[in-house]
Length: 83
Picture 1 (tube, one colour):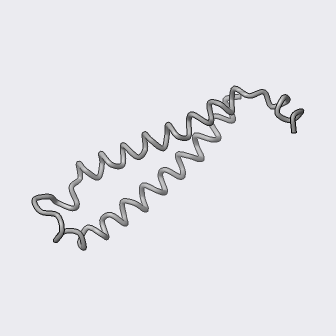
Picture 2 (cartoon, helix red, strand yellow; picture 1 turned 45 degrees about the horizontal axis):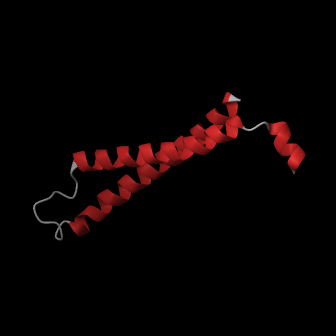
């Protein structure tokens, strides 16, 4: 059953990658509007962008891995008999 786990994780990784790229582009675009609102901080702080992206990646990875792990543990024949 590692095929199911691999399939779910790879599809989730693709969605995470797309979301990170879109989020990065949007945050860089919006930073010029927010620059006047934040005092003493740089809106394009690389450390903050990297840490936010890492945190979101970890949370999304765990959110995908837990149901995928449960799906691997289920016997497909038993599920088909019940439906």
